[in-house]
Image 1 (cartoon, rainbow, N blue to C red):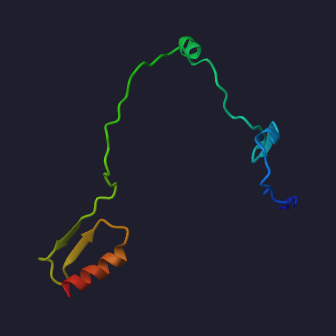
Image 2: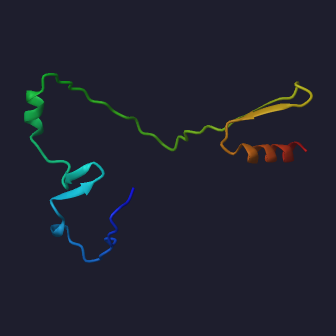
Image 3: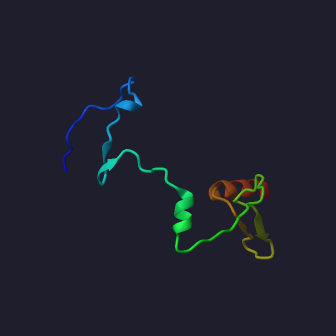
Length: 101
């Protein structure tokens, strides 16, 4: 596969009014403006199915998605076993070994 070599577009003097109406995208030429404003009330009135519902999301304060915990079984000798919910499993293993001697 070969590409036509073109100079980079790094001008600091670009202005929005100089942008072309269409640009070449991966899937061919595309209109620069991908969305347009319409009449939402008319579209809702003409819709064959209408869902009128209010959804509310409660306030959320720093609730991490990764809850960390560690579990150890001491009665499993030899050796004792431990499990931890972490992405740093090697670091956890080293720290646990240092703590337990």
